[in-house]
Length: 252
Image (cartoon, rainbow, N blue to C red):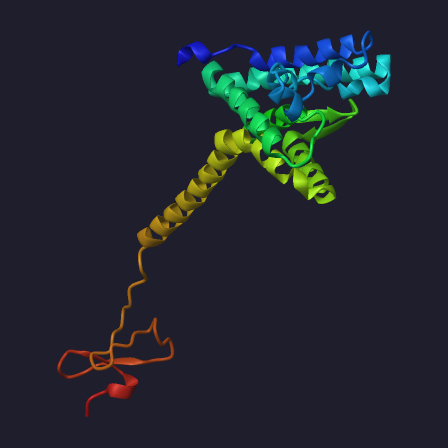
């Protein structure tokens, strides 16, 4: 299935978002024409099963200049995520990651009891989480000033997702399916890898403990078997038979 490999697939996805951003200044309803709509898809507008991924360019709400700046940053980060994931996983596996994300999101939108505008942005979220799992100590400059490791930003993303679900629990099926590609490709393997590391540390500790030589006793009572190690207060004597005895069991 190597023909599925699509180098830079996530780059093109980000550029389609940029295209929608530009088109919204000429036709404001372009987003609504591309957004996921179950009823209209069933009526024949099948293009929506793909275009919902980049239908919403919400950065346009910030105005032309601020929106363009935010979009530029978003696209640059998307390019970085794309290159990093392809470097870690290879083009084929990364392509499958995003294709699976699209299919899971599509299924989630179909079964979700409520519509979620801009659900395609969840694909950015799963890409970011995968990057944070593979490269947790990479630093981003927040507001171009404050350095912060990407793993803490991923935790913040998880908190925001949780708050969104608290506000409307009906989104749970969509959010679960929307992050299923992350769980399968990165989340669960990372947990399994961490569990193996813990088991390896425990095995090595147990092995090292078994290698430690046990302290040998110099005196051992021939009657009770106690030693100066088991009972440091004992005194030992040699009997006439040549055996060693503690003070409590000296023969007559």
